[in-house]
Image (cartoon, rainbow, N blue to C red):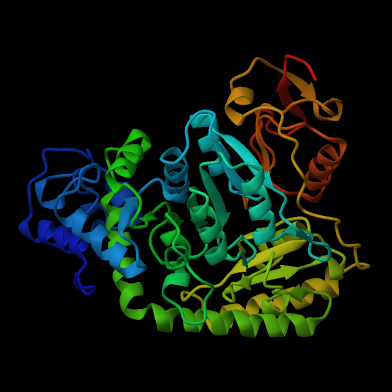
Length: 483
């Protein structure tokens, strides 16, 4: 048992500063002295600990001392058997889960509303996605969680699949029944992988949805930099007791940098300590902020700030109460329009806006006056810019027709066509709104008229569409072998 008061990486960096070691190694800025402008911008304290791996600081690729102890403390704090500090974001953690579980030709069961990093991993390894059609809320126009009955049916239809992949929670705060889905996966000899990019607080707060490790999952990717307080791009990969952690580290080292940033590593170390010691109080405050904002936004009228009233114990097994997700169609504006108005007219930067919803990320760093400013700005947007109520979208989710593996399509001979001319073609690249980074199209999928209409509508509303070589998404790369 470790001591959660310890922060071994942070303490080793502090000792390095005290000892005033003379640097004849990289980085070349030499504790900031070689780049005064950068030092002035970021601060001497920051640059003084932007250092390279050395004996007292351990090595991220093969940790034996302070990093090893820090990862052990994190595993204990999160209730995992093993943990790995990731400096390539949760993208690298998600891809490690996939690459360490499936290989070329293997099947993996997953919802279509996965992050692009999952399908990117399939492009790399050649595994084949078996999508479960997530149910959709017709009022909100968002994909929901994975129904246990749908998972059971898909497993029965694909008994040779190697793993089941679940989002917990979704970007909007929707949670699936992790305990029973994990049980189903294990009963059928499959691994359970969980993307918990937005679920760090599940491990520390009270009255939270169940976490992946508590549910018995094999691996979980946790974005400490989102609700955990660490620096952007720092993440933790958690492993259960039946996962071969030594093999997982080998997979990590295939793609992760050999020059791990000690700024990111120390932020993970310090943030883990803070959550282990103060997480309960921290996330209680966040929940209070979110609940207050929800109730006030509902009072404005037109907006729908949704919460646990959505729970149906199936496709919405639970809801993350810290999420401030708001449907905007009731005031006649798309979510992305409200997003743009908040940023351009009120100097408020929220997390994202899609066609029908916005998400304002609430954290312990927020203040009451800032929450009040968001509420009053939404009220003024309704008064000044509101229009006739928009009809609800049939679904934000578009059922994919997978014609070939993502890897085969991505590397296939392809040709560029005008978007309007792509109906019934096979797509060879990604198209997604970012954030949240959930593909509208992925390599290997059939392009339908409804997908073309969806992309066109998203462009008209100002959504940031990413993925294709065509930066304005006026053209798509399609399979040259024909329809």
